[in-house]
Length: 246
Image (cartoon, rainbow, N blue to C red):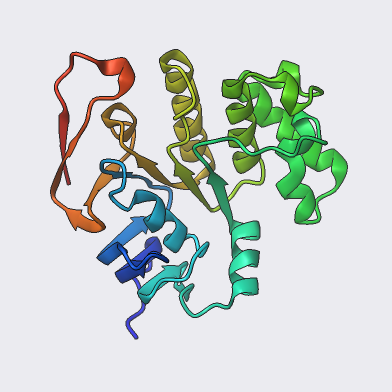
């Protein structure tokens, strides 16, 4: 078994994944992600972006192939070990915000830290810092049901950043946001990642979002390709589709 390069915090080789219905999700994907890098995984809907992020993060086991994190093999870990890895070292942002309705905003943002065993005061301070950065600090004591959809997504992003993950997996993180909100949140996310040395793997079908990354990997039908044609997003009507190269 060949160990990955020392400067790659994530490294995958020949990943294959099959969905429950038997359809292929990934076919022979190989890539490396350097420490502190922001990597965009681009491609149209259904190209395998989410599946790749789920495999890299250990959320689902690959059918065959290898996934390494900091030179340790993730693909050989059992379910409990993968869960601990995700809790302690990874952050995750979904396209849709999923918050605990019984908790207020800062408690939702602080939840991963408290689950790690951090004290309430430290967890609250970290949560409030990120809520302020994302312009949602004034809602810290509100319940999720009192927030707009875009505000709930900001809370979900703060929750992912508050524990200071080594790697942040962001699956279309600004999909629910309007363009003005999207730009601000993306710049906050990317600047935070750079200032804190967080590695980001960002799945997106939006060329403007991909342009903020250091590098782009393009997928099509579960395979890595050199060029992929991205469709227009709803708020860029009239603009020609963008072709991304890696």
